[in-house]
Image 1 (cartoon, rainbow, N blue to C red):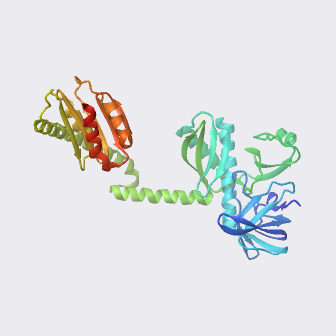
Image 2 (cartoon, helix red, strand yellow):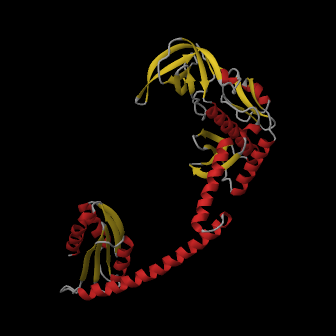
Image 3 (cartoon, rainbow, N blue to C red):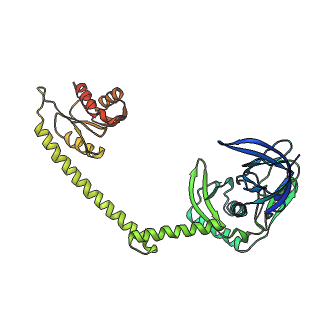
Length: 400
């Protein structure tokens, strides 16, 4: 028996009475749960990008609602305790339902504006717990276009345009200017925003655009060939704006400036950081040259004239090793085999023939790790930093 969907014609119905036709045990993750089928329901099932409603059926808590999509066109209510067949009173979690209505109608409005005015059709919609998203197909919407679309959407919200449900066949709806054709037979349900949009939809919606409250666009990201745009409506928009302002206040306090001076303050900090980095880099290079001179002075060349400087440092960083190896390799007939905290850097003077990249790869293959480079300079990292001494010893042996 098909479940009559009360929300199709009255999305504002918060309470209703129904008959329990079946109640069967099911698994809901690791918890026990029961699937209840009613003769009619105002609970919206999870579908079309919109999450399900929650609430209560008698004494039971409704934790999920699913569209069975079977021949009987049933809706299954997942509850936390068994219920006996017969009459039952039901109550929706209204704040959750109304929030979903605001977000979903806001999506229809936003998608209509992007497609009709900016030629960017929506190919996907998701209503999340905090943010909702639409995926737009076409050219990248720049900041100017996004601001225009947001302004246009809110102008329509402030006009409080009527939002209605319409029924008709595909042919009938096409004559009315439906935005997206659906290849289905029979009577279809569509949502109309007066003067702006007509779109097939089985979801729940507000009665006029004014009830959306406010629409704010958020982050835009590239998703394969499309553009994913985050947005919030209604109470979510208020909460988001308030949270944004709190973050600005906290940032301003940390920077000891007014909120409208944050960008300038960050710019100054970035400049100071860049200056400090350049200064520290110069000092690090000078220190590396000085350390290289000491190591060269302390290391006698072999009988064939080759000087191999091999050392494991306890606290040096990978960058420090690189600078020191580069400085050492400036000295003729010198090979540097350096390690610190599992990082390896092998380098040699340009006049030598040893292949540092090959030696590094063979060492890492033996002890475990990854890395690579050029014949004169290579760097890598051991899977086990405790093997740094072993790596330097093996590399030294491979020098020959």
